[in-house]
Image (cartoon, rainbow, N blue to C red; front, top):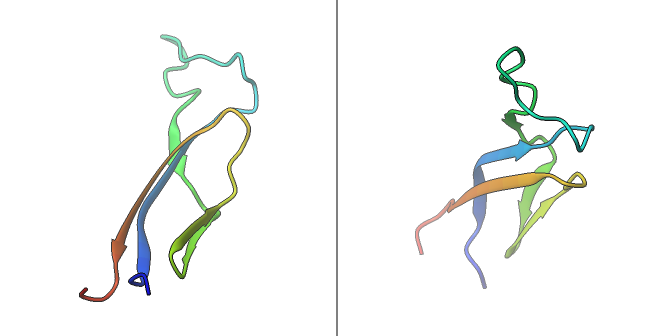
Length: 65
């Protein structure tokens, strides 16, 4: 049985406008944000991913192996 895991960090890079870019006047138009729709289950990570997004998930065991 896989060890229980917890999400340590979840980050998403996404903008609803697929042509959006950062500029000198708007340097944070497209910026990483915390990813709110993620959780773990037995041996799995479940997340809702937005179209065209980049996502990073860091998980760690919650109990010693």
